[in-house]
Image (cartoon, rainbow, N blue to C red):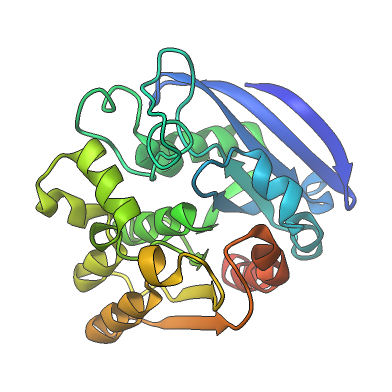
Length: 276
C-alpha cells in the first residue's frame, strides 16, 4: 500500500493510504490515525464507517476524534464508503452507487462485481492494517448514518470479531425506510428475505452474542422520523433482550457537529472495552 497523506496530529500521525483491493476490484483509500503510543506498542483498532456521499476524509477532518484516540491509545481506521473508479457501477443519485455502498455484499448486476463492502471491512482491510501497521487484532467498530447501519450489522453478523460497537444516527431498519429500500432493491434484489441479513432490527432476533450497543441520536435530526427510526431499534432490542444504550440529544441534527459533540464519549467507551 502507498501512503498518500502524512500529518502530525496530537503527538501522533493522521495518514491516508491507497491500495489495490482484491475484494472490491479497484483502488481504495483509507485513513489511519496512529496515536503516539503506537511508536512503542501494538494497539487496538476502532474502525469508523462513514455515511452517504462521504469518503475517508469526512470523519478525519470534521469529527475531532484524533485528540481522544491519542488520549486513550487507540488506532482509528476510516475506509471510504464504497468502491470507486471509472469501471465501477454508479448512479446519478446520492443514495446509490459510488459513495453509497451500504456495507453489504451486492448480489445483483451491475453491482455484484465491485460492491462487496462487508467483506472488505470485515476481512481484507483488517488483515492489511494488522500486517502493515502497529495494530493488534483487538477491534471495535462505529459509524454514522449509513455507516452506523454498517457498524451495527457487521458486528451482529460477525460474533467474536469485535469487542465493542457503537453508532451515531444509524439507519437501524433499512428494510423499512426509503434509503434502505432503494439500496437493497438495487444491490440485493426484490426478495426481502435477503434484505434481513443486513437489517439490524432483524439480525438482533437471532444474534448469538450480546455485545452491548451504544447509539446516540440527535433529536432535531432531519431524517429522524423517515429514515432512521430509532424507536424500532429500541423495540427490537427489548424483544431480543439485547443490551442497548440509546441516547436522544435534543437540538442536535444529522451533521458532523453532532458527531464531534459526542465522539470523545464513544472513543472512551470503546477504549474501555478494547483495553480492558
